[in-house]
Length: 445
Image (tube, rainbow, N blue to C red; front, side, top):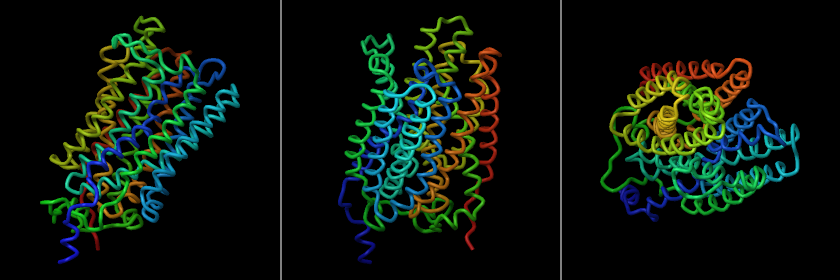
């Protein structure tokens, strides 16, 4: 009785501060989604990377992020979340700082491999170390609102792209605010350097609130569910460790769904500016205006919708249920991806398509951690979600590189060369929607 009373007692920290710290950390981690703002400069002299080359760096960062996240889940369970997120901030900052030094001293092939190793490998490792911490800590503090808190905890990741893109490329004319951007004025190398310092400082600040609640903590007036998939997450059902989880079909269903969803969303993130320029020029727009329009599609519409999608889909799932929400989200994403190529030649439709893809893609990062907690329990969600999240790394390799290869064919085949990539991604998302219908709570012997 005494332990139960202690679990229900007022927590030693305002749990709202966990959200503040989570968003601050994720704002920095979301810089990886701002990668497309660097790609036009990297395809020009003195770098002269191919379109595929720019996507290889992006994919290596995503894959490293996913692999290291598995290790991070294990590590933070042993030594606590605060130290792990601080290590992530230092590693991420170091990767970008080194990337800046490489970019200012090397060109061509040497610069490619230097940026691949620093921004791609080291930077991706920093993101992987820190990413799962706000989710795992947030779910423990908010067992009553897992979908919402998962969305809030990672909303900064989507909004971060908006911040770092506009800092890098400047503000569009319609804002009537004169800001030409850091990349045109300082160059890629110095921007990497500035970003790296900012990431380290902001993440160290956010780490102050990354602390687990007391064991057995329950919010006042809340009781965990006793039936359904959420019972395990609430503490009344199964609490599976990662070895047990890997023996369930539910894990592989969630993994495949996440991989298909990641493939589509990351493909668009990686190439939206390159594709947008090609599509708008094919529609009769001059190159400069096409570049500004495509940049706005990514920096404003995709990034902003991506951040809101995490919050909205997470909140919807707390009412509608994780299974129904996953099915609906993937179905909508599949339809949009099939139409996206045809929308690209018209600015208004490009903006709409970018917003819809970003909104649905953002939902992945609220629904999949919440579903992991529902099916396999809150206690080990940090470790378990790392394994589910490995699907993101696979999707991050396949999607952007596939689209980059189609993009390199534009010179010979015209803008139509982009079309197959969007068709493949759309079919993958519709397949994920079908898989969602098969989800059932795991049977525990």
